[in-house]
Length: 112
Length: 114
Image 1: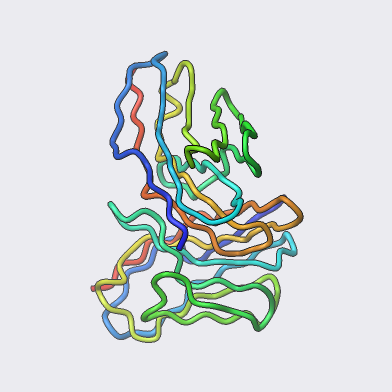
Image 2: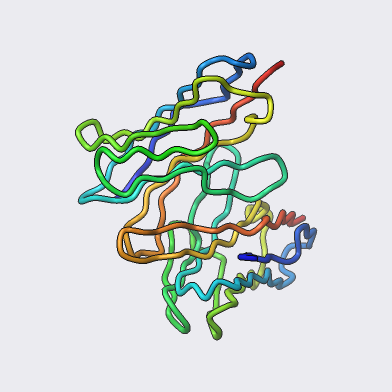
């Protein structure tokens, strides 16, 4: 079945540092890939997505590229802020399917 | 405003006392889903629904029931809660289309079973 493996956390960075959170997946065919963010005390929000190979999703300075050859969707940001402190989830889902598979989540803490 | 509304946000109950967590969406989505979030285990899908009266088990359905009598509502039912169901629960409403799938999450329900 489908699975998503995320880089283990927690991750602690200083403000303005470069962020990478690794995500790899196992799935047949061509799933859509997502990064969700969960701020303290809130539900998950979609951060960015990519629906086909070589697509790059981007939002709020975050980017991730759908790499079919390495089955990866790593999240990057060039300069993190304290307000980026949150839990980040990588996920995949099938087009026209209600079933999504999530990674375990990576907790990011950014210190001033 | 597009919304997924869960109630209650917090609930403490005793073992064996039936409870229902409600979920409602205003986006006319066909797909809805329930997840539980536990430390170190990420999000695990409990049940999902493809449309009214159509539901299917996710990865961890034991001890839960769902119903989908109307498109907008997808309640989660714990007939006889046990302490191992203490968790943070999220309802999601899923937008689907050609090349598009996106989940919209509720705020979460923190359940404690003592």
